[in-house]
Image (tube, rainbow, N blue to C red; front, side, top):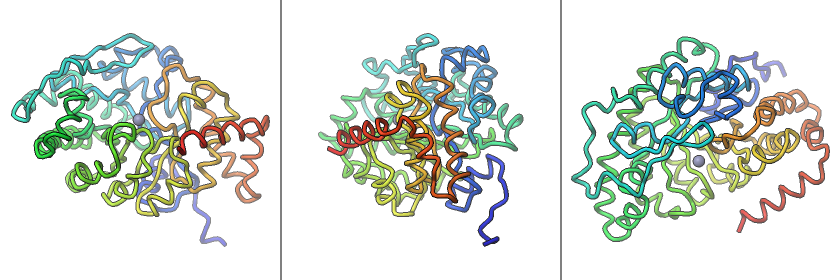
Length: 375
Ligand SMILES: [Zn+2]
């Protein structure tokens, strides 16, 4: 019996162990993408858009993931546009209550020969902000929790720099050109990723939006699998692949890459996702954002947490960047439910029964969600 008991771990060790598929004292609570909200911005006086451009504000807002919410990770790269801004993309910075975006209808590149990395790529305000924030966070919290950075994959960079439609159309009309473009843009991913390792990141999220609603699993295999294997070889810390939407048709390919983990969306059930990756990589997710974290309450959040734990999901957290209007109460319910489930695990996982008070309704609505997304 005793050999199964694992001493209490620090958040950082817990996350790094789970990323390597090693035993943990309890399931870590992770946010490979942003948990910044308007409520947290107000609490520490670090609002968007400045918290994406000023390293002190970025670090201060990011730290709330640990200090206020009790997660095992801190993730300061709230947006998906930091490096695109440094590449010269036209950015709409928005206000506190809205995400900054790339104006993709105003692309900066039209052809593969346009792909050029500016010489100030890593000293540009919006990439340097990330590097500075990571080193601040590493200094202050690096012993306690895992500091996660983010470097966008070449497929996502293709959307930002060429525009979504032109990029996807080229992949149909001239796949060779798309391969060449990806091959050139991957250097951006590697360069920004390695700089974040130097700044102190323990792991990196690598979003590459070959999403289920835009491209097929076969597309992933053809254009991205080998390239992602190369990313794993060239970026020497655990990488967490992130793709939104329904992705179960490509999870098997993703599992072949050597990524430490896949951050999966609630459009895929924990059970089918565990089957698809077949123990080859860890999974992190998949608490629903628009319904559960945004519009429902802590009980429903707890119920989804339990579903993940009962299917053996390795790390629990929101499925993607949380809505800026999500409540602190709902986000705190994630670590609370994880801890409760582990406390009760020995006596049949009653945390789930407990948090599902009010109960049948939650069960039913989840079934409905599943019914929809399973189609
Ligand atoms: Zn996402």
